[in-house]
Length: 210
Image (cartoon, rainbow, N blue to C red; front, side):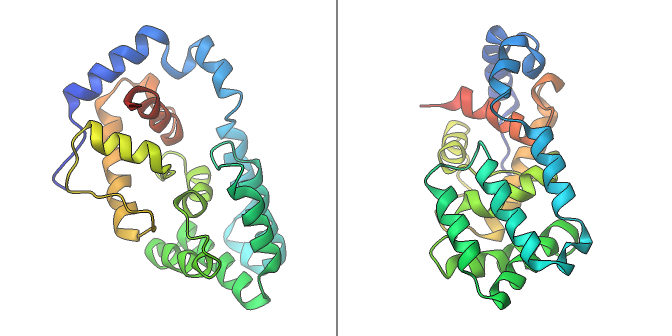
């Protein structure tokens, strides 16, 4: 990807953020905010729930998916009950396919896993960025990204990224390119802003709001 988040603009946002929170995400004021977003706790839950062997118990793994979505501070309250009902209504074949696709994303062929999850979620019009990206973002918070539409659009607009166009329907192409954009941008700011990708994207969310 040729376009990236401009270093000068990033450091301007960094300056604004550090004026308010001098220690970055370790700042006491920020720690109060982060109590609402227990990333480490959710990462532990995701990793305990989805080892490679999780495919051996489809029902339990599907319930773990619903549990993580319901406990997430990043998924909207509107989407949580819909996802839980969706999981409970799936037939055994689709439930197994959804679980296997998630495990494929986490442990093997990411594109195949992403597109498999998308296929199942689309059957009930739940092919939402938040639902497809939340568990990977918790499972691997230093490499994967959570796609929050408003934040993504603000970031692309603020940095005038024209080569990457946000669309409501999830796609592997957008996901991997946006992930690359974020992971490259992390290297251009102070380490106190990058304890993990959800935090770094939170910094961008707070500083690029319209």
